[in-house]
Image (cartoon, rainbow, N blue to C red; front, side, top):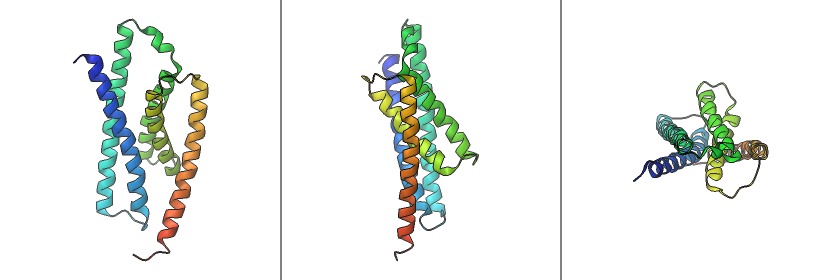
Length: 170
């Protein structure tokens, strides 16, 4: 197996861990806050999920930059002008920065959760959508709209879910 194949597999695994981790982080967090407190078991699930997310991010960054270096070293420097590449790099930086800001409680959770979920899915979609013909600005504007839309939707789900739990006896 050559280096390119190993890097592609690593990149896919990192993306899968990140997308799955971001999805389950939302689900577990929503279930955990339903009763107003996060018990030790719920906290343990969340910690494990965040570990999976961090593992996915490390794999994504290492494999992504390694693939970029490999392409450039093989003379494919034209790849550096691809707007999808720059959008993916920007979104990866947002994922990493957002993780640090969430950890430091320096960003509102609604925005941090929306950034995480939207960014992981955006990175996956951009990696898969090979025929996308859009400028960097267009991709990033669409991404910003989706971050806000996802934030709104997640907040509506939280309000509905938590509101319904207060009217239901278990």
